[in-house]
Image 1 (cartoon, protein in one colour):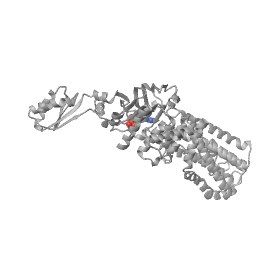
Image 2: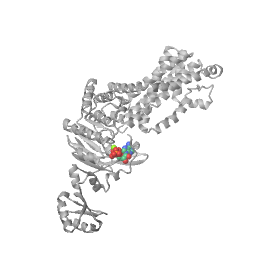
Image 3: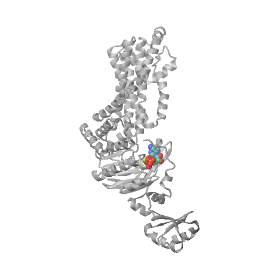
Image 4: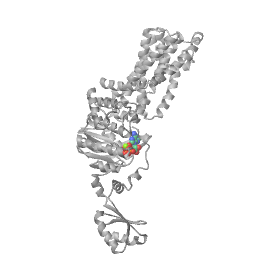
Length: 327
Length: 255
Ligand SMILES: Nc1ncnc2c1ncn2[C@@H]1O[C@H](COP(=O)(O)OP(=O)(O)OP(=O)(O)O)[C@@H](O)[C@H]1O
Ligand SMILES: [Mg+2]
């Protein structure tokens, strides 16, 4: 569905060159649900805007929905849907008329656009909101409307830029269900961006991790997590036992990255649940009592940390002001 | 293309009509000029040498209509900047709709709106004040104001899209509009008899001057080549170039 090679984009802002995307290669198969994960300013939106014909790449090429991006942008536009990061409805406009207009801009007749709007409203829990000005919608309703606007022409491929940003947990879960249904019930290929790890983890078949304009890893969430060396085991013991516990932990088969804290000893093993019995037996034999015990499977945050040396949250600190990047 | 232009036009129009207050606010300035400044001009035209021929209302009304177009249409780019900020413009650009239609639909809405406002001003000047003008003059004025509005709103949208800044856009406009306004002789006509030579010279370089002159001539009933040709040519060229610039800007990939 998408094949991109060496896609790059440099912005010139006040004489300074910003390399927003530096040579991205990506392949998305039909029917996949792929997530683009990265911190603020990583280049997610810029990549999406290139793939959706909104900005021209500085270099590189791409085929989107079977059409060459550079030679037939209009052909690409016909076949894809795009839900921008900030949505796209005007606050004063009414829900029904926005959907109808969007359908007609895609070439549908008035009657078809209306019919399609009604079907989408049904599907996305927007029924009965037709006459409502968009500014009166709740955050979750607005986001579902944005998605409806991107789906009016029933595209085979849809791009969602941060579909659940700034939504409460309940609306997020609800939106996830809609996104899953998009693929499951309608066979739509979905390419979404997110900076939420749990979202990438629970929603996507495959995750591309982007940092600083380049893809640093890709694979299924499980495969990515397996790249991190195993589960984290943390044993709490009395301070006087720390040294001995560290020794014992180092002898556990496959243990790695053993670290001693103030009250805990932490280490990584490929399978934390398998290592526990052996560890406990050894501690028992040495007469050491445990005060706590924790096994944590790696998260995508660990993946990001391993790949870039920063956690996603660290990476978000130097946030570029949103206004600077307004299209 | 005509279908798409119509879609964009009717959408823009229905949003404007939902907020008629703005159309009224746009009328406020010219109406105040008519009521609070017009009577002042009445004596001045009679007693000051150098004023162009015609009554004060024949001098003031066409000028106010040009001013209405000038201020009303120059700031339409603000709306586009808001749409840009809200993602509404991006959402349209991602559809296969023609870029030219995205511009034309909007500028046609602006032109219709300006013509409607101009009509209201004319009616007011006829009913409340002593304006006399032929049907031909009124028709010509409305045509010219429509073209002027097309030109100015095209430029406004193009400028907004190139600047993409809600701060720089009004700053540039405010800086440019006042000299344009003063140098076009809208408030007081810049004639050889009234203005020093250098001021008169500069004012001839301002395209709006010629448009105002042509409109004043038509209000006086002078439908001669001499009086109308320059203004019409200037207006025509200005409109053609502006719309072309607008279309080009809207069609740029990264716009
Ligand atoms: N039009 C522009 N002009 C100048 N710089 C830009 C422009 N658009 C994006 N950038 C810069 O390119 C970089 C990548 O931005 P982009 O919007 O693609 O990030 P992102 O991954 O979508 O971030 P977020 O999670 O905050 O949405 C940032 O440093 C940004 O400031
Ligand atoms: Mg983004």
